[in-house]
Image (cartoon, rainbow, N blue to C red):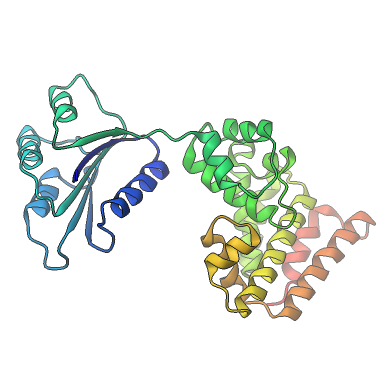
Length: 313
């Protein structure tokens, strides 16, 4: 079985997924692993690690990122010699954002039978469909989301997480939801909005007020802020109930149709801050603020500040 790989990939998320998949497929899970990024380290250090016996495990995984950046001819010759006579107990994964196939060394290494070359390209539409499986979203809205993220898989992954939390209850994602939350559409406002809602939920009033001051310049619709907070507190309540039933984060994610167990973990952490009474009171507070805005009893400009200040510690 091949134990040396050269991966060409410009997207960090797609690359990380492929590396994880390869480690599992090759049976190297749980073994000693070291990553050398040549933006910060040297190829020689990685090669020394390859040549050194590991006392921590029987096998070894060495990942060399940005592999040919600043590498000397001596180091490249050393790498070539290792590949020609590699240790099968080592899994060597060499990565590069873009390979210059005009270079003699790159041409030779691609042809070398002792190393497998793979160019990794992830289909954005397929990725979003898989990430949002269980959610209702049109093909045109998927393409709209992809366009806003400029086909960047890492950004798509992050934005899909936000959309899942926002619409975890209805499981329906609209064009309006995408335009509200996606970073590229609103610039920094989306990140500030997300930070502020998390600060409110985690009861960090000072940070929430600071974020809201930043958010004011974007003239964010106050109803969108209330809607996002309501979605988060509902999700916290659901997670809290299922946690009390003894379900794991993975089981809860599956039950609620949320792809990311990280989201469930965060909601469970927030849930510790809230009793069932607290959740009821916070939900009532949101409804009260919403009603006061609609009936003119409070101005939109101070509604969120009032919400933040009114929240119990």
